[in-house]
Image (cartoon, rainbow, N blue to C red; front, side, top):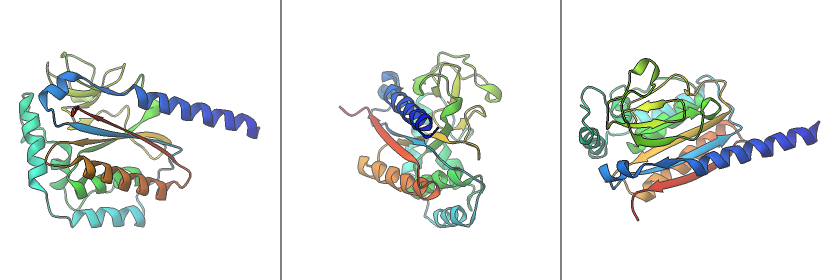
Length: 231
């Protein structure tokens, strides 16, 4: 029995590692913003749960951080570049900083929301077990399946898998299908950077998030990959 469980764990880890390798960003997105970079992180064996005193403290500390307007403005400019109105559909980190003190969702979401606000960095968390095919960041053809969020417009920047959209307007809003829940055990976290954030700060934010996830789940296996338009 233990041997069979070991084979299952190795197989699952290999599957997540393979998916991490297959994530890609379309060149059309890099053409829109050559300074774009994304750190993707898989968490195998996550133990999530409802907000507790520990994750509540993370939210409270992040809520006291000063708003870093220059970084948020860079995302507003990126939205305008593909035709979105950022005052109507706000970049995720802009929306978060307008909801202080930060809302309580669940431990894993609390972890990445706290890092997002601390660094003024859009971060998304997704349940990998509900993905069909690898995540990729592309410019929409128009009409892709996006559940209740409505179909994206042609040229809109979207995250998607083989089924359809997983997040509209770069990082505006995620669909329910891949949302992190308290039952999620295999997750992917997407940390998105534009200048003036440095690549060093992006990696630092990733390390901080990995530390929080490990605190929540001491047995979690973390793997990361950075994709960048900078050659």
